[in-house]
Amino acid sequence: MTLVRIFNIVIAGLLLVTAGCDPEPSLDKAKFAELRSASQDLMAALRSGGQCAAPAAVVDRLAAGATALQGKAVSKAERDLLFAYEGLVVMSRDALHLCRSRGHLTSFQFVPKGRIYVSQDLDAVVERYDLATESHVYKATGARWRSISTDSMEVIWKKAEALIKNIEVMLTYS
Image 1 (cartoon, rainbow, N blue to C red):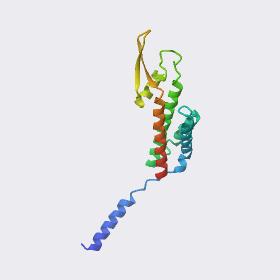
Image 2: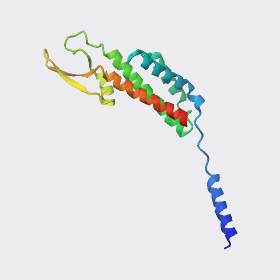
Image 3: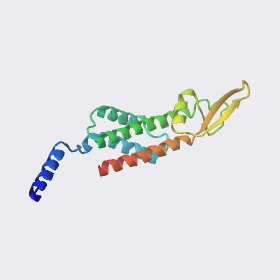
Image 4: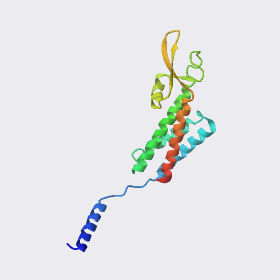
């Protein structure tokens, strides 16, 4: 076989292989503009007003934006980004749930100051973030219960802030 014929066979093989491969669509950043705006608003609220100052409306905007993009994420980069935003929605809702729960039963003396009573609806949040709990016994009845520190909200918000930064990196370099 001549060198020219071998070269032609190799080129033909490469053309056949590359012709069957469609390139992955790139990230359409315009699709994520509302989600990006909402996540930046969330970050600004966290930085300016404390842990429970994040308005539920911002979290609702995030959730609505993520829901609207369900099934519309075409590329792997878009699916990964949507997954990150969905995680941010879950984290934000969990942190706001802790904010609302911090006053639950605090008017009773058996809940120590600076602690949040862990009710059944908080169990999933405590487990999801592996929050440190403290066990207690109500002396009058002998009933056992758990509490978490009010600092637990900060743990979740710090994770949310890190996720927002990761999302920004994904948007910038994709």
